[in-house]
Length: 219
View 1 (cartoon, helix red, strand yellow):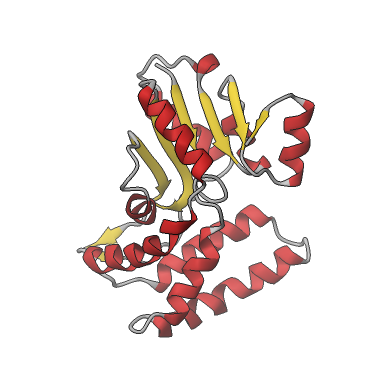
View 2 (cartoon, rainbow, N blue to C red):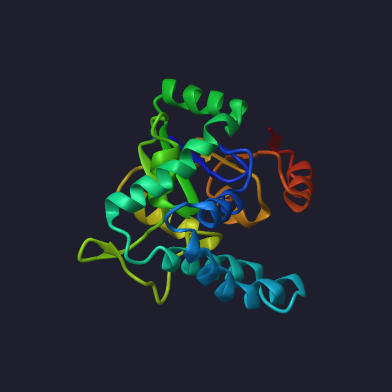
């Protein structure tokens, strides 16, 4: 079995999702008051990361935790509607070249995986028109039917992406040499290293240099 692994932010979706998510919470007519909770908690680690005093990946993980905690108490239906509204904003901003590749892989009977640090319900809402076999993202946990406050969060990024992919596919016979991975950031190197065909999509500077040096395809 060949696998085609797609990142979301900056790859299938042209931009970064988190700014859109923050704006949506801030401007939401019902939940907008919760934005202050998120802002107050993320501000210290955000400033520290800008001063290179705090790792960016840890800051991103904190942001994911504090954002979902700002939504604590929402029912699953309310949360799905909240994320659907965000997903609707994404519709006109998908990368057409990546979408074309996705359909090519489907025609070739490849196993399609979307692997992202974004929340699972947002990914599912945003990509429901695309035939992914597996959608992997950061999970939101519920208690008694409502979003509970998360003390920690399993943010799917970097090495965690690779581990998750391997755990999901561990019982399958994967032809890694002839499999594909699409992503835009050097932080996705653990995923690129799994496959024989890494494709850098609108890559950041570090990934761009690495792709050129190693003769990778750049999309």
